[in-house]
Image 1: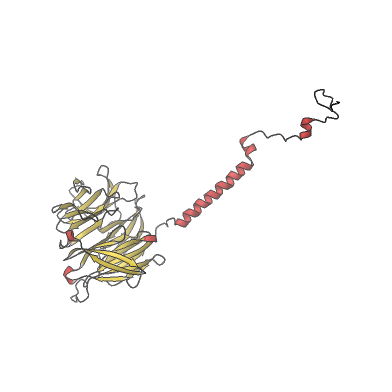
Image 2: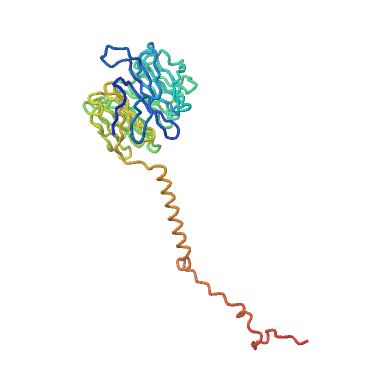
Length: 394
């Protein structure tokens, strides 16, 4: 199922994970449409509810926050793993921090100060680590920052990390940060102290563009889209050695964005002309394809829903689209409990059958029937045994 929400001014978006598997979505809307001279509409952040039954966003936002004109338009957005904080990069005001407050069925966005990142210019890449303890930014000027969260202590501030940062991602254990450049280079950083660890090797005709770490906890890999001349492939690096172990043609066209599901089972690629494909990581085979989802437009947001097999995509031309994936259904919590209950009942029945037939099953000899007490003591009136006591004459 595919659903379009809102107008075509959406610049970026993200899911918000809330307690009890409730999911919201935040959409950042630009001040005007691309090529539109009318700039009377302000730039806003809007929070929408999500209905898992219909796989759609609410028709009207739960709350709207209007950005000041001095901040410019939204560029990128990310949400803290707790779901309580949102960071939005803007064209003029650097990064803006918002706290999501819900009380008595009312939802609000409260603006907060973010001193180290005010007035730093547009940041194409911003991301929180998986555990929420680190926050990284990558600028169009090639500057890379890693900050401790929420103290905002600067761990790394490298002005010349890249020619221009194109993409970045934290590893599952939050130990590493991978970053890619518009010139095709890719570097690995240690998030504890910000030290550069290595640069991924590539051939002279290869350009590494996008990157995502595996997130299933069993496969320590780094996935990267690689442009080899006119051929687009997805390469895989072993993060224990940082050596490339292979590549595969998946999307078969240049990708504009890449994402991986929260449980690490699926990898998604969005193309520069509006297509998406979703890959089963275990098999490295395509499980879902949506052609012309954003016809002729490069997909700018591609993100998996935290608890449903649904993706959120955005483009400036076509707005936000929620797509339910045609992939095998996951086991629901109640189904797991029913399976465990069934296994317990089956075990109880088998145990009872074994118990009832234990003599023949274990080849134990059957016990003889217990004799009556009279048989053991004998009949004192008829016994000829001299050892048996009879009446005593005094």
